[in-house]
Amino acid sequence: MAATACGGGTSTSDEGSNEKPKELTYWASNQGSSLEHDKKVLTPELEKFEKETGIRVKLEVVPWDSLLDRILAATSSGQGPDVLNIGNTWSASLQATGALLPWDAKNLERIGGEDRFTPAALAAAGAKGKPPAAVPLYSLAYGLYYNKQMFRDAGIDEPPATWDEFVDVGRKLTRDGRHGLAVEGGNPVENAHHAFVFGKQHGADFFDSSGKPTFDGPGNVAAVKQYVDLLASDGIAAEGNAEYGKNESVRDFATGKAGMLLWQAAASSLKSHGMKPDEYGVAPVPTRDADATGDRAVNSMVAGINLAVFKNTDNLDGALEFVKFMTSDEEQKTLNGTYGAIPPVVAAQQDAAFETPDLKVLREVLTNSSAPLPQVPDESKFETLVGTAMKELFAEAASGRKVGTGAVRDRLTEAQQQMQK
Picture (cartoon, helix red, strand yellow):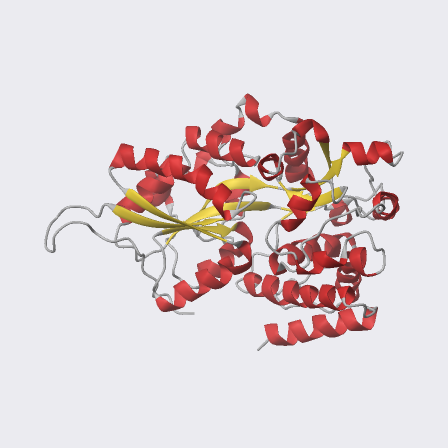
């Protein structure tokens, strides 16, 4: 992938004028319940930035199922935005293209310095030993969301702590046209995140210490099969979930069609669907054994959204001003508070808005039982290949075909071979 990307910001000044460009383009990731929801959240903030700086921001909210492809196309074609959101797991991959602005000490100083951010969040912003490829915007962790009323109606006293308990609870909730769990089986990125966590709990990694892919190792095969089996053989997720890829699982949970959800910071999305905070609880994602330790106790990836700048933007000063604005203490409180995320800016975390029961659980998970996805140059390719293999396995299960260990291994072997081309 060529490092020839340039920003899409356009100057409104006459040719030859020294006037600074008055426009930026921004690709935002879909954080809320829909693209329209994100536009409603972000537009007032971008208008506030324009009022303060005179710089207009052209916003496009990009769905997760196409965001990575759009970014990769931009890095190779040179036709991209000035500023963009990236999943923090893609940081090293996109850093390797050379298309993103390195956040060296000088650039970090422009937005207040490195010390403003939590170390864990910055650690997921690029390869070790190199300046970050982006700066943290939202910090996230996976949690188990559960419908309190559905639990009460089924005689369930507390959320499950192990996967055996989880499946048992899911079966009790699957009745009267409702299911125990909603999943996004058609979303490769979401699939890959769960594969990583389940793999850790099976004592496996998708890359060895040298960065070589080990997709079809026994632990990874078992991990992927366990996740797909939630629909395939356990039957606690609806067959239609195999096609979900744009937050439909959040909608199903919020509207009572499913009793549980494995998700990152779902509060704002649930609210937009009419679900009140006291109607659901949040617990850590289960582990295989209640007394698991070390990697086998990992129940979330270190999740989050980073903010990057294309290196060849024609409005670098404006882009840096925009990043400074978006990572300011006040904007961090506003945006993370709206989306139910955890601010990666230390000062913003101290606000009482982030002491809610759900965020306390997610912050505890992020601090004590999460692990970063491999910071290797081909990490984004891993998410695409493994996540797509899982999407295909979900589709097979939904069509009534049996998904056995051999079928899972074959798909992962094929993904590994594609990875090594």
